[in-house]
Amino acid sequence: MYEAFTYVTDHPLETLTDYPFAVSDWTSMSTSAQTSAMKCKSTNGTGSITGFKYVTSGSANALKNAVLEGPVSVGVDASSNAFNFYATGVVTSSTCGTTLDHAILAVGYGTENGIDYFLVKNQWTAKWGDEGYIKIGASDDNICGILSAPTWVTV
Image (cartoon, rainbow, N blue to C red; front, side, top):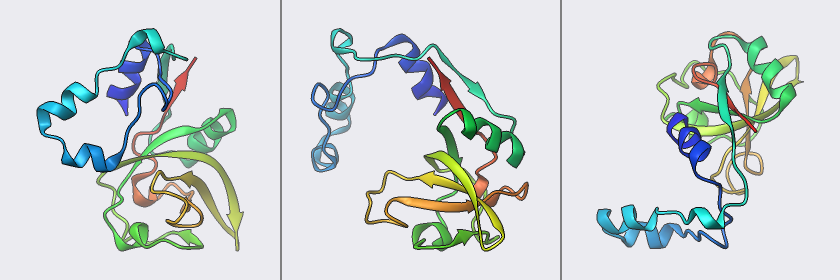
């Protein structure tokens, strides 16, 4: 996440129309073709950021306060069945580890059946999880590593 934010501070964002991407195209490319395909055209930029801020790690309250300001990038451990096969409810399982391997977006928080959770948007399409979202326990237990490295951009 940090490398992407740093890059975008110096290079404007592009639209999907200006910078198309298809997974099938990507997987069939050689490594050198992937690298050259990633070159953006800064003249096509539509927006930028001024930087990013770190949210206090390990604190559910700090992440809740940050989410009140806007979406927050979070790293999670997406390798467990609790994450991969999520459908409904709040993930509170200790079987979801804390080794960060996936970046997603915390967009809100709430309470379900007396359990506080962070509402998190994943990019694995609306067919995954609860229409593309997952509810991860909002406690200082750092479920799935969500409290390990939260950051948000400044514009």
